[in-house]
Length: 422
Image (cartoon, rainbow, N blue to C red; front, side, top):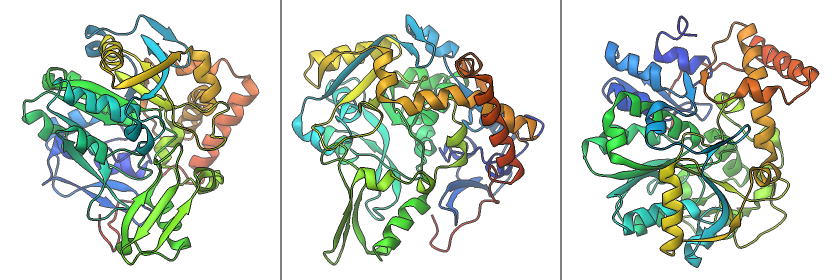
């Protein structure tokens, strides 16, 4: 892979970019700019040559190039005592929800990530939380923010099904020299954990890495198509909420002239061909947050909601720090724990994650066979996990991936800005 990844455009055009923003943080905004492409992807464009040292750091930490499980820095900080073949390292697995009824109602699922982030601020453990929220100026878009109080954290509650670049701000966060927490997708957290091997300030200042268990990041065209179905222009919006206000909650759109539209969660996601997932998400070796201190997931028996409920999260504490955070948040009244779980409970409520984990090694093998670069995968057991599936199934996955490469479906055009900009 290394011989083919020689510049930023190679990562983008080979369909490996997730748009996390880390390359911009490492290279500088004067050299790397993120644009929204016509396809609805946040992608980096190299405006000036990237310095060699910065490029080497990008290659070692970019989640499109490298995906790692347990890394030395995490082990030194106290890795889990147990490792499940599918779900990876863990110190505690439990079911619960945000103790504050308002947080539980407004946030996605049971509001646990919101509650944990707010608890860290209220307890004086961190000075701010680095995370994303709906843009105040353009509600359909997502922006990165530093929240310094629980109200700010609450203002970012809820899922964002679209492009986001949370790591674009990580170097600014580190330069502040203050303790902080990070909330993001597993790929974002994995990249931040790899950055810890490059920059000692990460371990010094980032006191908690929190991840959602991820079904994949949709391109912005998913949102554009939804709005077009209601004949609503993006510039007319006053609100776009994907989830929350119940579990799973409805997608809700409001316009400045008083119109409102809603769609149920199941209606929004019933047609998998319209999910508009980024290419990199389809070959993700870690959608379950193995690099996080705590990963939180929807808790739906069978893998999808049967209706609205009060909201619950399964929580996986993966490190000693993650276990301590769950224990302290429970003791401090920030979260309510209903019961302890097993990893087989995770299988039953996230079966699609099990299927993806079993298939990813074969998909990557098929892409390699077609001469396509793939991420380097470390300490994620993907080959071992693949052995759970019959050989015929693995061959089918590999051949399918090879065929998609040959048809150009795993590649992207060069990043170009849309008429509306980013």
